[in-house]
Each structure stands twice: as structure tokens, then as C-alpha cells.
Image (cartoon, rainbow, N blue to C red; front, side):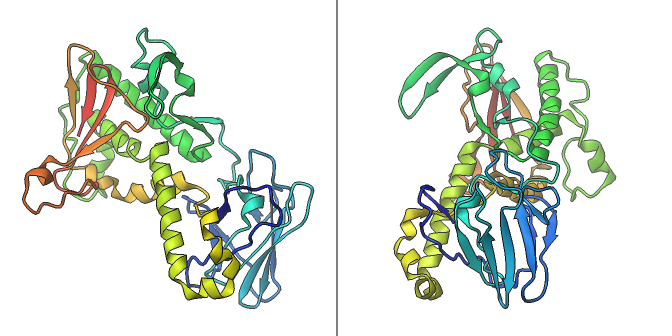
Length: 357
């Protein structure tokens, strides 16, 4: 749970229940890295930026102290004690096993990332720069932009500043996207030059991808484009904002219906609308949840729609989903999910080329 403002050290200290099973370990968001919690009444574990900390928090902003807080087991409860260091505000949070919560003010800018440290790059583009540059009139580093909310038009906006946020992804995720985008840009350059050698080889599978054939498929140029558009549909700021709104709305609805929350934290219950409930690593959760369903793309055909005159435009949430099959089928599902029959996905990659799946 995160407060809208963080300037009041005496703000609300609420309990948020996230489950009912005993908490024995903590897993880093969107990874398989697990940190076991100490057992037994009175057991302790240190939290901080110090490399030797059992629960290390890598914080690019530098607000987390080397020994920032202590996690203490008290019978059936875990308690987080702020160590009152110069960088800390005095906050505490308690949760029973399975009802783990965190002291939001002290940690709101700190994300538990992979143990290798913060991302190499600060600026993360959720729409690749090589795609944005395709829409530059002179092929340079500036593109015309229209801000829909205000109606403002800018004839030249720096590509570096478009469709980007600081530290939007974790270290490994940003590196993986960079490697993938290198493959995609090479495939698109070949397509633009009419170099389609190998494009007609097998690139669709109807078997589960645990086969030798799938290993070959991974390098197929059309499969590269297919995977690119799938993850591009999930990796934008709009996707993250939508997820955070859904989490906040659903969690509050659940808490309002839970009599335990009203009984144990009546003041917090009354001020529930004054806080925002969100995930520490929203984008990590989105990508982690999307990955198992990527196999649903394996039987989809890949096409490049090419026109002679510039006709396509790009947005900061560039993948468009449509299901014409459901639109004309009486009682059809009308779904736009990856496994929905009739799903279509479109993404402009230049003013004259759109990727269609």
C-alpha cells in the first residue's frame, strides 16, 4: 500500500492482507530468485542496501540506508522495524504469516531488483527507438508528435525523450529487450530491401513448443517479428497504468468487504481512498504473467502490409488488437486475448509498413 503523499511521517500505518498461507520466503518480482525467511520466534533478518544484507534492496535514488530496517518474527506475526537512520522516516508495518505488508514510505522508490545491481541504462524506451526513427521525416533523431490530451502538435520532438521512462524495466529485462530489438531491426531492414530469403520456411507450429523444431523456429525471421509484436503489446506505460488502476480498484473492493480489515484497522478503513495500492514492479508482473501465453502465437500467420505513400502513424501504445471473427459471429466470444480465435494484431513499423498477425 502506497500513500499519495510521503511528507507526513505520522501518516497511516495500515495492514494489507494478501493471502492466507504462512509466509516462509520472499520472491523477487518477476524472477525465480527466492529469499528464505528465518524460522522461530524472535528470528531476525536485515533489510538494506548493504551487499551482505540477507534482503538487499537496490535503490538507484540512494534513499535506502545500508542497514535500513529489520524484519522480526513475533509468534505468528512478522514486523518490519525502521532503524531510524538518517535516510529513513519512522514507519512500521506488521503482517501475519501470509499477510505480509511493507512500510510504504521508506521503500516506495526502492525496488528489489536482481542481485547484479540497478539497470545499466537509466532511460528505458517501451517503444523501441529504431521504430520511432522510422517515422522521422529526415531519418534523424526527431519525430513530429501530437499530444492527444492537450491537442498540442510538435513538429520536432527528440526520439530519446519519446515513449520512455526512467528505470521502467529491471536490469535483465532491459538487456533482453535490447537483444531482441537488434534481431527485429535486422529483419525489418531485410524486408524493406526485399531480401526475403528464408522467409518462406516453416514458421508456424501447432504442437506445444517443447520440440527440437521449436529451437529452429526461434531464429526464423517471421517468428522474431511475431514474438516482437506480442511483447510490444504488453510492455508499454499504458499497460502498466491499466494494471495499476485494476490492482488499486480490486484490492480496495476486497478490503472493504473484509470485516477483519474494518475491525483491526478502523482508521485505515475510513481513509482507504487516500492511499494507492500498487505492485512494486508492475511491469515485471505483467511480463512474467504474459510469458506463459506466448505459445498462443505459434499458429498465427505473419504479414507485412506495404503501401506506396506514407499512410501509417505510431502511438505510445502501438499494437492494435481486433477480432473480426467475433464481430460477425452471433454469440461469438468477442475476446482479444492471445488464445482467442480470430485474434488480429497490427503495429505500424514505418509510415509505409505495418506488421500484421
